[in-house]
Image (cartoon, rainbow, N blue to C red; front, side, top):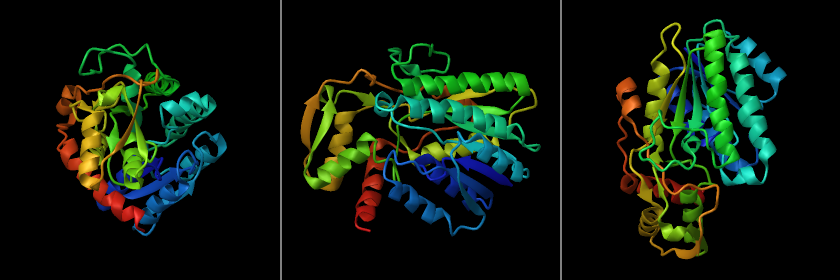
Length: 323
């Protein structure tokens, strides 16, 4: 069995590739290795995957129509696609909006066009985001909640992906499942995320910026739980004619950022120097995932609370920094 994974050098993509390879599957990894954050970290992830039997890598930008279509045409034996490549980061969309439209909208369409050329395609699972819920105040967020008022361009592009996928399901009977990820963290994570940036700063004795006195709450979800849910959804192949599905995948518990800081201080053995600032307009006050739909679909139940996941991240972080 062969699965094509876009964003293979990314945080979630790397872990999904590892999980599929561990099951003895073949994986074709795709990534453009953009410099949005340290390319060295992406290369280090790929270095972990490269020696594993069944893994092949292609450096391709998913918005490059000719290159992506040519690759999929060569991989006609592939039966599944996990589409995780995207321009990430809510705040960076204020700096480079064009990158989000190119990768998250044009790139998504290109992946769908390529996937529908796979004669044996059984299932395509793609990444959406909890950001689509915008400024919703009803908690926890449920898939039936309105998602027509995004507060960032990143969120708008992810909601666009969901609508585009729905159209492709209707037009071409493309079997798809979208996953709305909630604040994923853990080893080999993204250095632009708060938990990673905080760990770096605390380790160096530098200040960290905390918004609204640390009262913002996030549904922090450990990477192992995300991967288990993603792979289980991938294995649940839609019946012919099924409309594309959308599921939250999170931890069902909004934790205050102040608790994240406390755990990092405890694990790193150093106090944080706080720089308190008001919340930016692109940030929401709280996120929390209603998981009833995905639990009913695949039996998904996250098993890793923040108090267990942060020590695991810090253990990896300390070792990685010493390499």
